[in-house]
Length: 345
Ligand code: SAH
Image (cartoon, rainbow, N blue to C red):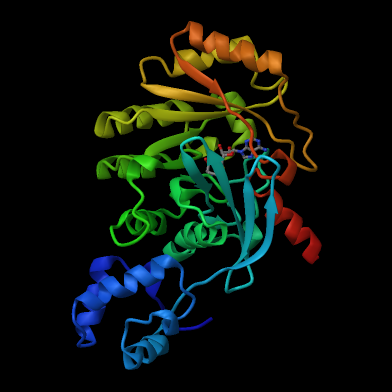
């Protein structure tokens, strides 16, 4: 690997300090930041910088620039990208069109370490944390390739964001900065399987992002069977952490609940879920499980899903059944990367 420093992972203040240390005026930092966030692939493209500075920078810094290895366009307009990284690893991002604009689902790790049994992203052997620049690149290059302006970001692709905490926080600062893509925290959702200490840390920062919890079951007994993380972090403690997060940020929590036939879709499960979430300002997203190759788990039927939703609503919770985009292109997390790694072997 190159020993050059990753310039796109630097925050505006750090870039300014670097410029001052090179004897450059402060405003150079703003110029470079703008170019980087437009998605240039080399210093040579930064046409308003003196040539000598461009050469100097390219000796000590690298600019990350992923290659589009595959691109699939769904009949509903959803676009799925498979990006190749400098070290040969690959990651996925999904661009979705909603009434109010474009939203992108991005990855935070190449391969996940968490091991949820229903998820295609589990890949401890090839797992590594993405750098802040590699997380940001998914926004920049998807935007450039599609000619769209992305207005919402969900950290719901491959990887566990709170297992790559420092880099994810730095990414949030970069994407939020003026002079770059400048997407507000209220337009960003962070989804986690529930790493409790990090939820407390995040709460202290009082960011206005939406915290989304992958819950998928209402009891330790059930959740422990499908999500190994639950064996370390107890479900009641997790909900306590969510209550704390709400107290600190006043942001309603979002819960993801993937519905698995005969496992977590009974009326009794819905009653237990309502009991667990009682008094917590939140929203429940019900998602029919996406079938993953090689797994015996099946999605719940429509009737079971609507019965579950009704049971929650009767108990005062708000619950929606998530519309599924990009079904025809394996748009759920990890699926394309997995196909790609199959073709490699
Ligand atoms: N690691 C984070 C974010 C990535 S997963 C987290 O756990 O939240 C994004 C969401 O998709 C999570 O809610 C995850 O549990 C869910 N998911 C993964 N595989 C799925 C599948 N086969 N069907 C339905 N939802 C799935």
